[in-house]
Amino acid sequence: MIVIFILIGLSLIVALIFLSLYIWSVKNGQFDDNETPAMRILFDDIEIDEQKKDNNKN
Image 1: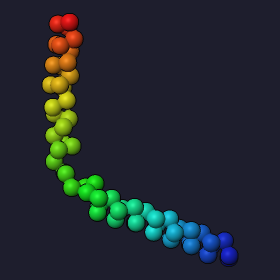
Image 2: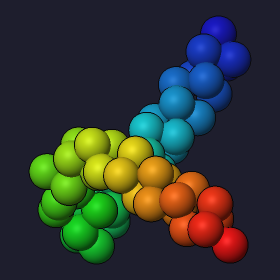
Image 3: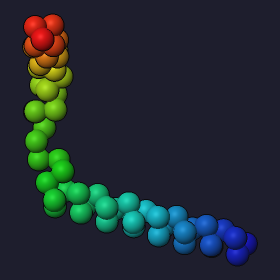
Image 4: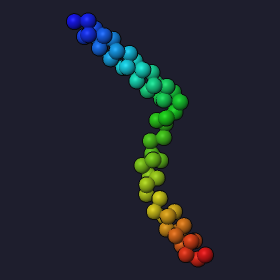
């Protein structure tokens, strides 16, 4: 029975750690920019193609 209380206590501690890390990341602006990462993948191919063209010229 004591093992259940220990596991509940440990799970609450882990949950509080994850909650505090989430709140910290939100306050530091980790989730502010929602559009750029989704659009960034559209422009990577253009940059890679330009780098390949530059390398072929040399």
